[in-house]
Length: 219
Image (cartoon, rainbow, N blue to C red; front, side, top):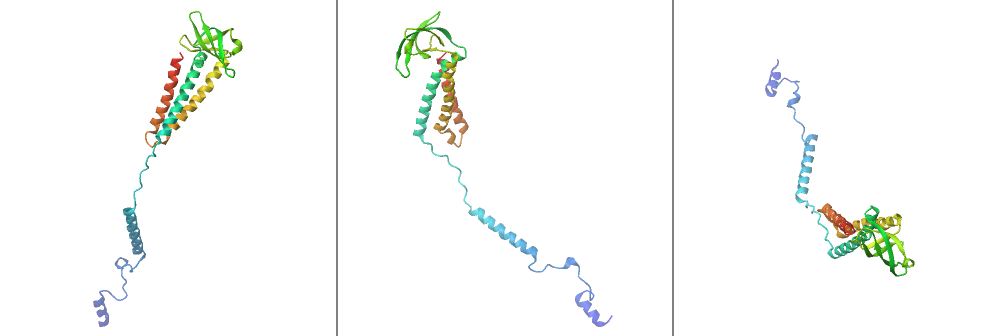
């Protein structure tokens, strides 16, 4: 080996023409990997900045309740519920078979379009002057007609057939259910964010209580 070759080996530590191993090579400056890492770091810093400066979303606030319209609606619905229950309860009891049959003597009728008649209702055990409903007019004054009533404590007697009884309570019950939904809406129970189910349940419980009270009174 010549002196020139030995000098080259001494300076470089390897023979001329020898190749470096892949593990000892360095990536060039500005490689793709370093660029992706830099972009990722920029996006992470931007996300952190947005998180620090983002305003918290306020919680939904309950809508203010309008007290006066709600009270007026509840009062109107309550009056309608009591009226419909009071009108339909006796007819419903008699349709269900609870009642006493007898005869009534029509004594007076007032009014022309929808006359209100009264008469003396008599059974084998008791007699009482009652308000008459059903198929009775001013032309029946002085006549004795078959009638039925729920009992001695009632205030009215019915003259007519079973079909008329059905017409006296079925539409009233349908209107009663509609008034129940109107009560829920008028009270504002559907506009509550919290305890909405409890408020709606209280409205329907009140409607059921009115119905049961009317049925007990008409027994």
